[in-house]
Amino acid sequence: MFKSISTRAAWGLYINETGIRAVKVAKKAKKVSVESFDMINYSECESEDAETVKTENGIHFKPFPVEQQSQATKTLSNSSNINDLADLAKKAISLFLSRNKIESSDRILIAVPDQFVLSRFVNLPNVKSKQLKNIVKFEIGKHIPIDVSEIIWDYQSFSNTSSSEAEAEVGIFAIKKESIYTFLSRFKQIENHLTTIQIGSIALYNFMLFNEHEIEPTMLLEIGQENTNLMILSRDKVWLRNLPSVGLGESFIDEVKRSVGYYRSLVKAIEIKFLVVSGTLSIEPNKKEEIAQSLGYELKQIDIKNNNILTENVKDLKGFKDNCLSLVTPLGLAMQGISQGKIKLNLLPEEFSKKIAFYAKKKVVMFSSFVILASVLILWGAQLIKNNRLQKTINSELGTFNKATELERRYKKKENVYNKLKKELDQISSIGEGKAFWNKIIPRIFSILPKKAILYSLDTRWVTKPEKAVSMRIKGKSFSPRLDFIYNEIKGAFEKMVLVENDKEVPVFDNIEVVKGSLKHAADGIGFEMEWIIKYKTFLLFSGV
Image (cartoon, rainbow, N blue to C red; front, side, top):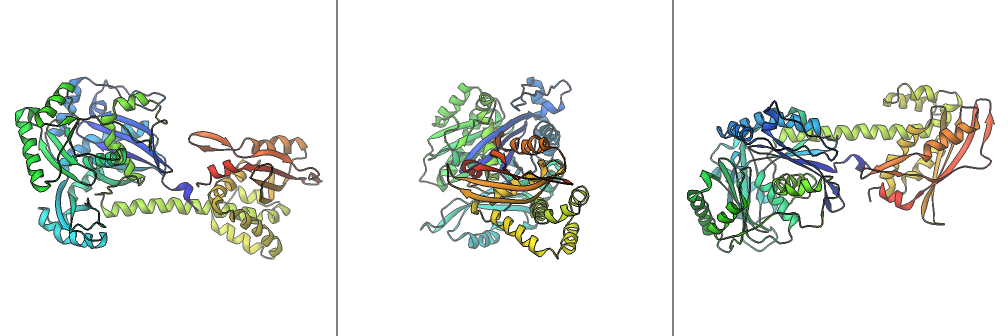
């Protein structure tokens, strides 16, 4: 019933050592639509000379002098504490919020660099997910060198539990409670939207799983100022290791080769074919080729290949594509937020998750209260108009259930009228898949109705000629003595009524007419009837089907 307020969009925020990379996506059928993106350097927040670049396409990115970027990065790299990262990111989050609109239903997911999270990959019995969780609880103390009471942890199986293999590869991920609580305390501005704490490599893996039909064994090096995230991935396996960047010379190549050698001792059946080089450290293309040749792999570029990832809503598409390598990690993160990520790892403490759930339920309760009150208005409108109290009620205590209860007690003798109007409302609600449509339309009808008019009843029925459509008829009264008020103000309001889909306004009603012979003059106004149709395609568009 309340599909219209459920989460349909999510922001992925990758907070790394030099800044924030953000992407917003929305779920449309089984496809992912990229809606917006932003890139903020910490130097942009610190520099007094930094200018906020605002354009009509919502992209706010400008290069900063190298010395400013280095200074911002050095602030973080002098310490490995995640809270230093949070201190840098706090101002960047404020800047992000100042130039991006966060809808009330938007989720926000944060990814942090891999070096701040402990990760271990182990082989455990290949059992069903519920049994596996209990096994991980038992095993975690053997693999994470910190007391379990002091960490927030989660796990992910990278094997098919329905397969006949005896063992499953399981990743165990943990972060210190003290660190994550302090980290989260820096982001009070977004706490009502924050649903997930993830790590950058897994967010990127989610993107690649969605983007590519088949992932041939690939090594990814995310190279930072002092740390490099090494990830080896395939369709059903991923392995992570954090290395020192150490200048990108021979010692760096040797360190990578040692890690690959260790990986091959664990997984002998996989031969790495490709190398992807990304990260916050600026690396010339010829240097990337040199690294690939030294390791013996083919250099591979990341771009969007899957037709199920839509980018037509990105107004600066060139800017998005130019920065694609920096944005695929927050893109994969945002995909998780709309249930399009295979890996659902989450290191957000449970009490934060419960708070978010409560916030979401609160919005549902508020919306349901509005729908119920709209229904009460339809049921009791006819009786209230007879003693001219409806307008007074609308202008006073619409927001309380106590008023609705009092009205029911006061007019319970009018059972016949009540049952008739209830039957009409039930007829509306019985239109199967269209409940979501009526939950949108009924409040809008009352909201656009001029103050000098009231509705007695609302009736709908399906018609098939000349084409399938919903026919709607209303009965009401105008308190203005002028006939043109009915034609210009009431009829005109319905003619202008629109709903928004994909940022486009769509007219709802067609062929609006005042029913012939329905105008009845009385001492206190003019009774009227109007009818119109709702085209079937319009009905489906806003029914969520």
